[in-house]
Image (cartoon, rainbow, N blue to C red; front, side, top):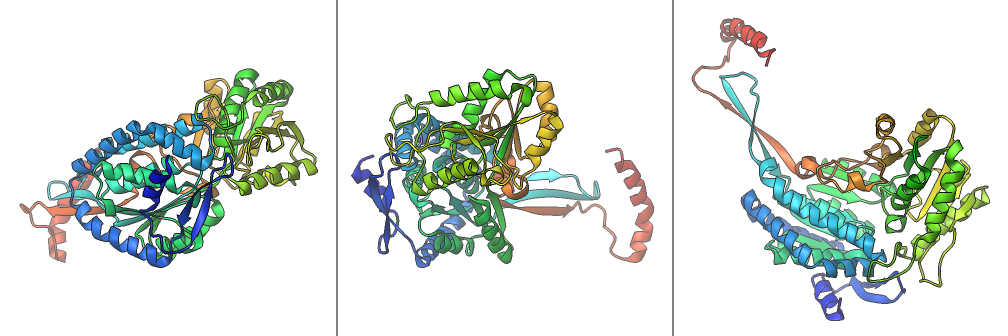
Length: 506
C-alpha cells in the first residue's frame, strides 16, 4: 500500500495529539506514525455514533443485509490489498493472511444471510392459549464497543462489528496500534458498500485510556485479548450493568489416540500449532501421545517442523511468518529458556532467526516439560508446542482438562473413539482430526471459551442476538375477559385446570 493510501486511511483519526511509530515486523522499518487518541476524542466518537444509530435502527433489516452483501463483494475485490496489509502489520505468512481474509469474507456473507430471519418478530407459545398471544422482538442495544487485538485484526473485526451493525447498532471500535490500518481499510470498504460513515467509528490509543473510556460509555462491550485484561473489562462492564462478550486466552491441548497414524497426526499437529506463528488463541500448545507412539511421533513432528520454510514473502512460498514484535519475541524465548532451565528438552527449533528478520522465531517442539515450568500452565502465544507421553487415555483427558483455560481442544484418531474423548473435554470447541480450523471456520458454530477463556459466544445466531435486547409483547385476544378479582378466578379456575391438563401434551 502506498504512503498516500496509508495517509488517507490514518486521516480518519484525529491527529492533534501524540503519535506512535508502527513497525513492520518483517524488517523493523517504520510503516507510519499512528495518532494516539484521548478520552475527549473517544467521547466525540461516541456522540457521533449514537446520533447515527438512531437513523440506522429505523433502516429495515433487509437493507442492512444488502450493505453487508456489498461489503462481502468489496472484500473479495480487494483481497490482494487486504493480504498485503495483514502481512505488513502482523508479519504473518501469505497463507495465514489468506485464512484470515477468507474468514472475514465468510462473516460478511453469513450475517447478511441470516440477519432478516434471526431478527424478525417471532410468535412464541402463549401462556393462556386462545386468550393471549405472545411475540418476541429483538431490538438493538444501542452503541456497541469493540476492542480488537493485533493478531487477527480483520477476521475479529468482522466477527464482532458486522453482527453488531446488522442488529441495528452503532459501533465504536478500538483497533490495536499495530493493526489499525487493516481495521481502517475494512471500515473504508464498508462505507464504499453503503454503510453510513459515522455509524462505525475507529479509534486507537493506550488501552487504559481509550479502552476504559469506550467501556464506560457504550451499551455493550465485545473484547478479545488476554484473560488478565478481560477480567478488568468484565468488572468495568459489571459496574455499569452492561453486557459483555469476552474471548480470552487458551492453553489448548491435543490428544493423539492409540489408533492414530503418527505421520498423519504430526501433520495435523503442525497446522494446529504453528498457524500465524502460533499467535492465535485457538492454536495447539500441548500434545499428549501414547508412550508407545511418542518416539515415532516426535521423529515425525521434528522432521516436519524443521522442513517448514520461515521467512517473508508476498507469495505463498513461505510456511510461517514473523512474530509481530519485539515483546512477542522476548516472551516466546523466555518461555522456552525457562522450560529448558527446568529440565525440558528441545526437539526442534528453540531459537530466534535474526538472519531472516528481527522477530522471526523457529517453530519449536519441546518435551519433558516439568510442572514448575511456566510453559506447563501459561499460554505461550507463539510457535511452541510441548509433547508429552501417556499410558492411559483417562490420564490424557485429565491432563487436557487440568488447566484454568477451556477455549479449544483437539483429538486425533479413529472418529468414534475421538468423539467419545471429545465429549469429556472441557473446551468451547473440540476438533477431531484437525487442530482448530474445522470449528473455527464454521460461522454457524458458536465460538468461545469455558472457564477463564471467556464468556459469551461469537458466530451462529447467538453471535448476532448478543447485540440485541429481547422484548416480549403480549396481546390479550379480547373475546374473553381475563380474571381480575378473586371471584373471577374462582369461576375461571376449573377451565384453567382443564386447559393445563390439555397443554401437557403439546
